[in-house]
Image 1 (cartoon, rainbow, N blue to C red):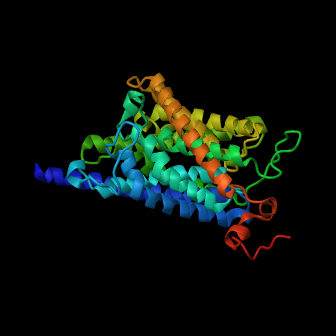
Image 2 (tube, rainbow, N blue to C red):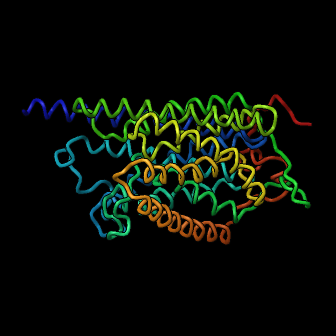
Image 3 (cartoon, rainbow, N blue to C red):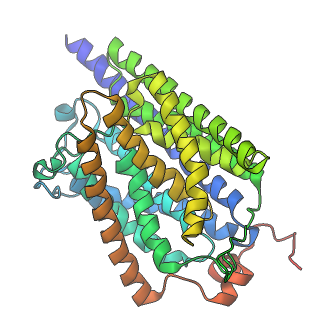
Length: 404
């Protein structure tokens, strides 16, 4: 029996370490996707944000956030610091394996924000917000669901297997608060309300980034099984990964078909975001099977094609479509669990979405506003026109290709 427990301990720990490595690779996917969908003159800042936010999330979640999320504390917030009170024996797998798997999720939420505020937000206010998000905002709402406090019963019954709401919508709500404050990029919308497309610099990079994210998602959802020590666990992981893949595939093809029907041409950027929307849509319930994942992915792809122009009509400028992918599809994916899982009530899902969304949006808006008053969020007009790279970093991403 002792030997069996040792094997289970090893396998469970291995799952979280390996899955965490896959999710960490998603940071590269976000960097490539955002670089490809924004202009060359801003790419160095994009890359700097993405590597810096990952590093900051890892530091702040270790020193503060993990214990706010998983410490006993009270119904609102956990307590403790630097993983105090957690032991390998009590958890049944390595504490550091759990921490590593959890911290890459925090970085994912922060990465969502980066794309939405691209090409007009200063570097340092963004990074300061990541500190607050990783240390306080994300862990508090995570304490109510994955931390088990249920917010004193208000979140009872809420189900989110791998984070359509807990991770993706959280990033989306924080991004929405920022975008409403900083406004649209210069020249994005005409005085008559007409939308002026601002093409990205490199669709090859954007496609590479999407494939990297697709691959990393197998760790994101598969690792959320949290155990590998039994036949039932590996069966569950296999089903989750296959369903995750199905959601992405259905989302991509749905977006391709719809853009052909609507615009008479297939829009690659919509197909890329369709795949990502399918992934986000299936993330709350990847354990519900392939058929459910197929439906979730189709709806996710449909929502992308509708949501991206909808945000433009509201003059909410999102250079990479992150609000549509992570916020809209995240809400849908969470609701889908209440629709397709007979053990989960739809009203409990809706209540959880509203509670988490209200908290994250309001808290984020307050923090963004304070940062805006203290140091300003947006670069000046000249910097925006010339590109953020030189002003913010002193570097150019492609110095041999000089702009006229």
